[in-house]
Amino acid sequence: MTTTRITLLLVDDDPLVRAGLTFMLGGAEDIEIIGEAADGAQALDAVRELRPDVVLMDIRMPVLDGLSATERLRAAPDAPEVVVLTTFHADEQVLRALRAGAAGFVLKDTPPAEIVAAVRRVAAGDPVLSPAVTQQLITHVAAPGGTEDRKGRAQQRLGQLAEREREVALAVGRGCSNAEIAAELYMSVPTVKTHVSRILAKLDLNNRVQIALLAHDAGLLDGADDVG
Image 1 (cartoon, rainbow, N blue to C red):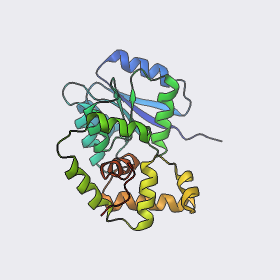
Image 2: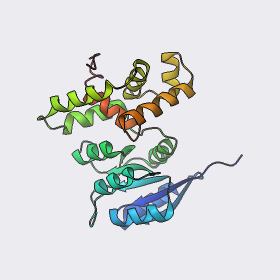
Image 3: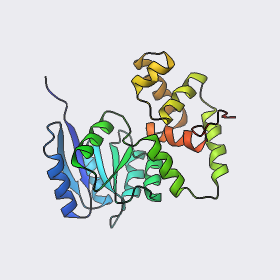
Image 4: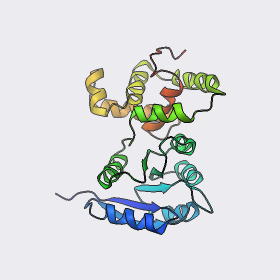
């Protein structure tokens, strides 16, 4: 049986980092590195030309940083999935990248097998960070001012969802897979996928990470049950 290959673009201003990632990922038979870029501007050009499935994106780069590049990429139609490369796990720019539509992040010192697993997960449409890590990230970097405003806006947006969609959104926020949601809510996996697609469309979100962030913002994963 032929395995579907995942095409990957590496974006980092340090050629040694790119070389290391190429070495780490080169042994994965289902991942093909189809290009490299040294800054965000080069990444945008490379994505237009090569159409990768996944982009591994450094944040701090010259010319155009990874955050701005991620925002531009994810705003375009048929955007590739973006995994942010970072040195720090509790970083405001990482959170901004996730809000912009990145599917997750990996630390640069992450073991090779975990980076390979992360690429495979985002290519399959799954996030690469747990709800606990998401919550830790929000807790460490969220600004104290404006928190209630963000919470109110998030609750208002979630209020657009039907009851079943809201239940699915909360399960996504807890990090449940489609199969786990199906078992918990007594529905089929295709039905879960349909609900997730409707949630993304209704709320104008990019991916499951953004659903989880919205649930966190609304306070629904801290024991609160009301979306107003």
